[in-house]
Image 1 (cartoon, helix red, strand yellow):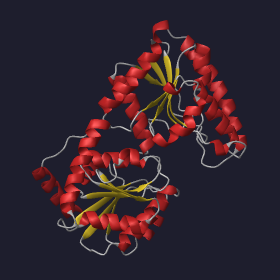
Image 2 (cartoon, rainbow, N blue to C red):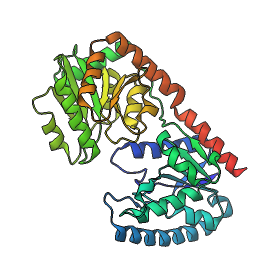
Image 3 (cartoon, rainbow, N blue to C red):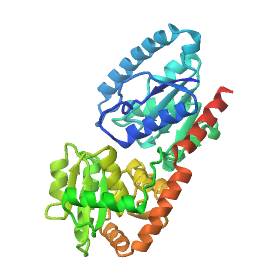
Length: 376
């Protein structure tokens, strides 16, 4: 099939890494792996941080004009190159989709969305315009792929057939697992690079430094790390952003290595050589970084927020603590620091679970099966 792909929250080609971009790219990769042709048809971003009804109405107007332009463009193509289906990734009241439903209706093609959420409490408030647009799009969808199980309760009542909601676990392309001698060699390199004790317990977190829930998570993590009674630990913080100065201030006088933004081999080496991945996950949807850490065989200590429990199996692949509870997080981290056998068992279980349930191959089968069912 020829698939018109659109992400109203953040374009999949965005240069700043994020979980949202990773999932969008992952969906495109899965669709292409299934043999579909994917065309990212618009860069129009409808997301806004704060409620502004006038701006929402302007975006709606711009979207209608963009939809007309897209339809003219599609109709000018040969029949074999026209879209067979529209696929929108991540829409909600802050990032509604005004393009997909209109284009799909006029061209008479299926309309599919992934990671849609519905918040009835936004009705009539300052987000009302975006809320109504998101609801209309969800109602128009032929399939809704849910990546966060908590969204289902509000999505299902909007669908005329409950079977239109298809659960899709967050997924990724699984990295190769390294051997023990490779891990030790890489750990020696990192220890020398950052001048840290290679025999200490290495804690790792990877997250953007934004002045929102990310900053709050960093503050909770700093509080938790300060509460650890044992001193033979080193925390690696990978990330950068506008709130970096405030993040570093939160960790003042603690044994923390701020690496800045890392990608590629160096980031993979840290994930391969750390001992525990830690993240409070305040107001987190589910956390792709948590999934990536487990794919590298790391046990996770995280806050029980949003759909985090869909990714981290509490007591099996990691430990979940009450959201925002620094004392509970410190106790969970300390328990794993003191028990290397349990760390190792959880790390192996984490890797096995990601490979079995969160792989690109598994996602490809679910996506392709549902789309072919619609086409049939």
